Length: 260
Image (tube, rainbow, N blue to C red; front, side, top):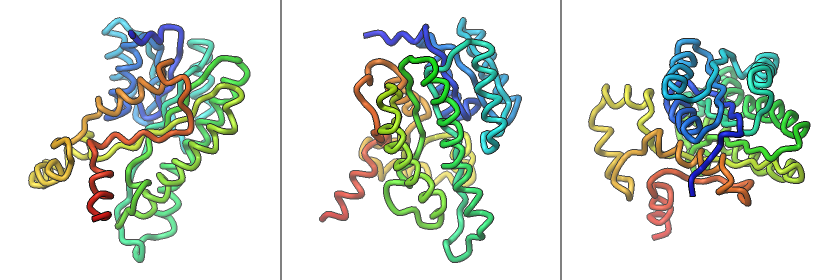
């Protein structure tokens, strides 16, 4: 079954890099018109241009999703250009690394805003549009396996991502009658640009982590984008409130070890 999103508009928050770029590209390849949102103009413009050069439709929007006024500007830009919003992908997130005893209140608050609160802001703004449209909608939140297990030395990030799993479930139930599906994806170790920089600094990390994954390799941003495409499409029309783990079997293997 070929996925056809040619009648839909997707807003990708964090669409200018890594998982966001791959998600923007795969949605555009399926025919969706894409609103590439990023805080850095160069990244958003580059992805929108890449989509356009491949025959797709995309516009860049530069915004800081931590501010509700700027979130509203994203919605208005999408409606102004395409007249509708059918898909929202919330990808932005960043972990602050520090032992819980040493983490400051400011760092804690910043992690919760960047990994959880902004998702509520974006989802609320887009869901209001989806309700008014009276069309089916799909909201996809990128969380992390750190929100499904312990997150030592990045407790704020893990707590925020665990909260995101809960938020996904709550919104899925609240908005189901309007046929707005809300799901999440929990990636494991992914070769994002940020992680690749870490690997360059410590190459031994790459092989060591690959050996811990049952499928024997790191994930790619395209692996996550494939799950995004599934949840954005009618193939998942009866799926809501779920968190799909995309980690090569790492999480279940760790749980199996704990179980004996």
